[in-house]
Amino acid sequence: MYQIDAYEYIYLLSALPVLWLFYALYLGWKRKTQAAFARPELLELLSPNRSKFKPTLKMILLSFVIVFIVFGLMNPKIGTQLETVKREGVDIVFAIDVSKSMLAEDIAPNRIEKSKRLVSAILNQLASDRVGIIAYAAQAVPQLPITTDYGAAKMFLQALNTDMLSSQGTALDSAIDLSGTFFDDEDQTNRVIFLISDGEDHSDDAANAASRAAELGIKIFTFGVGTEQGAPIPLKRNGVVESYKKDFEGEVVITKRNQEVLEAIAAATEGAYQDGNETQAVLDFVSEQLKAMDKKEFEAKKFVSYKDRFQAFLGAALLFLLIDLFLFETKTKWIQKLNLFNENEN
Image 1 (cartoon, rainbow, N blue to C red):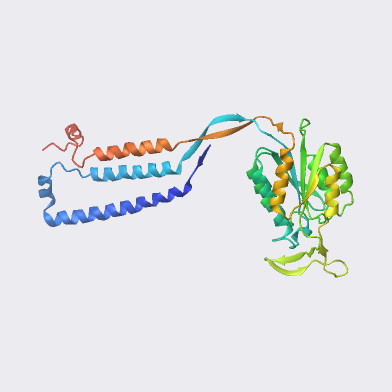
Image 2 (cartoon, rainbow, N blue to C red):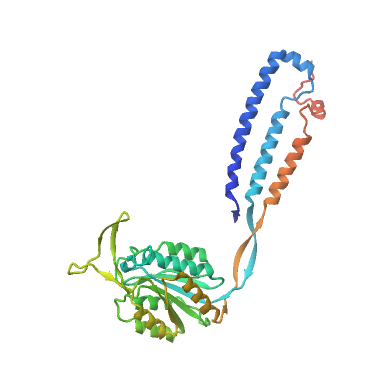
């Protein structure tokens, strides 16, 4: 396995074709000037030790010097060492509402994007906690199992949208029950669900689901997005609002944040509710809550530790540069004595 620290330096290799172009122009000018000065036979007599090949060989060596320097600047790293690390933290499942009501724009840019940015900000401040992600509307579906890979968590997070589930509505009970299945470690003392939603519930069973979670030792913290005044649900095509969602009577639906439902869910598990519209307040709240919890040591995890390999490339560049410096453009006497191509025969 390998990785490159600075890919941008590879563009320096574009200097090689330019260098060889100038060298070709120089050779053409040199031959033309020499031809105007004397015939080739006379030039051979005037400079018998001049090598025709060594100038090109020096250019080849200089090209290798540039290539190795560029690769050294890119700092390739090769994974050659396995290390065992231990982590301590809390298991956290993010349950994110992806129902159509999350398209309401009473919080910029809309509720679903605000939720994703909020979760991303929380991930940025976590250190060694394990995280999982589920998405829910009328039903809940797993997105990412419990892991310490925050990069993967952010990738799955960005893929969430309100079109990923065909059945619409908001089933908070389904979200809570599914989140509870993510905690498969019986020894885990702190199990946390961060439920992000506007609080609209079409199942009427969220309180019972929260009670079941409390029996499993799960603590739920809820974050409400949107406003209590509410907003219509825009129906867009190519980013342009065409109309707003209407009910069976033809009236525009106004979706409002239901703070009471979210507070009741949190209270049932001895958790807490927090206004999700204020990102910094949420981050401070999460940090405070996690610090107060006991941490559990997770199983040792092996990962590849990359070692810098730029030294070898810079060493090779220095070697070729020294060869180039001590390589003169005259013929090499010991090679001449070998007479490989019978040049000395009359």
